Length: 421
Image (tube, rainbow, N blue to C red; front, side, top):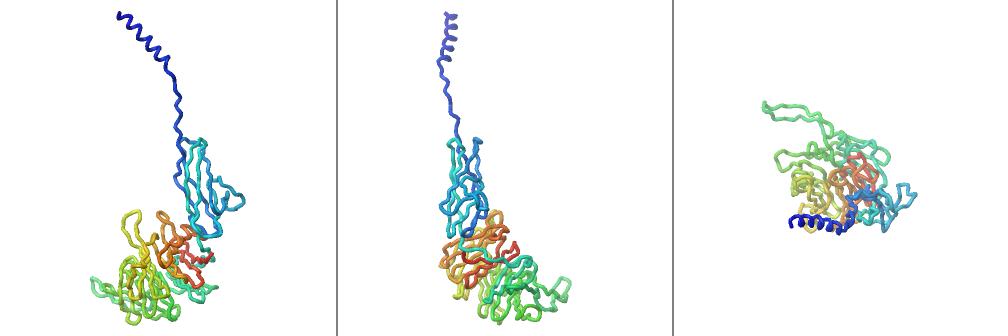
């Protein structure tokens, strides 16, 4: 009986194997994956163009195809705008002749019913580049003042000069004071020496008022006053007094209004200094004040760069604050702005506020942002680069009565003028 049992078992196994049916398993299909979209530049003027690129991968290593869709504007193979297409990657989008924020959609397909979708929004601004000033002349323009006549004054921290452009010629001066005897306390006793420094150290801003020229020299924490450019026109200096409440440290920008200087200082906030006595009458926080301007209606607007020293975003919160002439802040007018490292500020004839974003190449682009006086975001233009409508650490701003916007493009060493598009 045992031998029969052993014979039956192999037969059962063979029959079981013969009765099994082999089922085919369909391979798993993976959709493509869009890692990101880019637009260079990230925002454009009306009728301008940007290059769009989609970065996608396919787990199955299938060949990918790209289809773009736009509700406004047109898509082209390149910037010659000779051939329209919707299937290139990268592809060029030419903006329409009206401003706004426009969305371009992208669909990526792998040819096996797998697909992925995404979109990118492109702001189209209301301003266009009119002119570039100072090419080959300016080095690191920081502050700017534009006279009603059209004369442009620029504080250049790169070559320690203050420049004037009359529409035809550039001229400059670097005089910072007169030779004086200075007493310096040292550990070995008092030492008297001659201060022969006749140049600005780090001119950051310039302002004209009452026929006088004021120059803010951040390197020595002073504001110098001149009746005419150069040594012959030197009048006086408003200086810091170490350890006192009169110091301006470090001043970054200023305005003159009536009998007072209002200076934005990184470490001591905003200071109001009497031009007659030289004394500081009022001080207010916040620290890290950067840009400062009057709006023509008695209100003082200040850009504030505050935050936490936690990497990678060193400055986390930015503000645009409004004060009266006694530096009383109006909390209802404070704008918490999504501007990374704000600097220059100017108020246009309509009351809208323009702010320059220094930015950096690692965390945020450089651009100019526009807000209403109530704090609503209007739009922005420009990004980081050396192109005609790009910026490299834009600093001082000025807006004229005819809505021309002068931008100190610090890193590119020029002043760019924009106008309504």
